[in-house]
Image 1 (cartoon, rainbow, N blue to C red):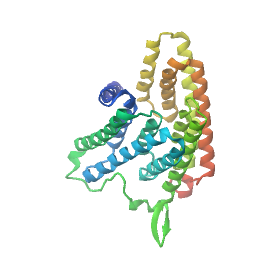
Image 2 (cartoon, rainbow, N blue to C red):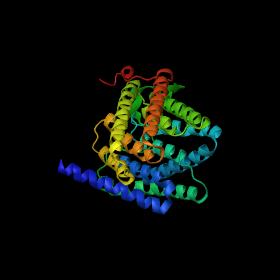
Image 3 (cartoon, one colour):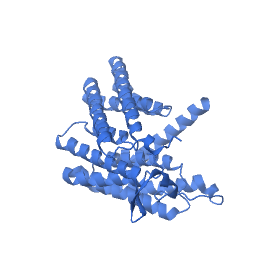
Image 4 (cartoon, rainbow, N blue to C red):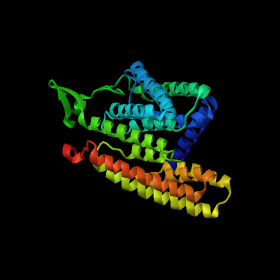
Length: 335
């Protein structure tokens, strides 16, 4: 247990230091980009991308820059954003779901949404693109450091975005007897692109304060398989409500804003010990509500958080029911 505490504490410290240094170099308005870059770096450590180093570097930097440009345009024009958000999130959903999971989708999807809701202009936008380029470089440098020992003993290819022939059991749509699209990934990509783009448009159209929480919730709960959407929806609602009540209880007694600010960090730190989605949402909710409450007030923020998350859950569940539903049982993957 002591080893886990030391490990988690050290990692949390490294993340905080990295984000602060990133903020100093690329500007405070790009701090959330730094967060997603370190998350992507840690996530991609599970994959070995060094066999085709240059090719994968070009892929990552292209993804980062395209997402940065699309988010920039979308944040200032909701009508263009309706199209660009769909294209960006659908592309992320399809290209990065190669292993039929969301491991690589989450950091890049969150990166896009964070940029969408922290718009920048002029020099800050140039710094954002530089930061995204640096992020791609950092990912590959870490790849070399982590996987250099495997270069001489690798027996399988590992690529960021490539067609995997082992996935034929998951059914592909055919054209002239040739597989052209994986149906599970295609359905997921269309669903997450459409519902997230529509939600972002609605939030902007009605000028909903903190309405981004609806979009984040929809992105988080849209799953490749329907069973996962239902399970995570219940856990997200439970975690949100519990997290809100914890903050309300704490803030009733803690009036000092400095101490309240520490709760934001404590929530992030405790997240490293979570083992299920509900507990992760408790920690995330604590951090978010504590942070926003410093400006908007505790009860208003708590009410908005629960309300917007509930709306996001409702939209995600409805979309899961109506838009190209895919159930795990249909593909007999359990066997």
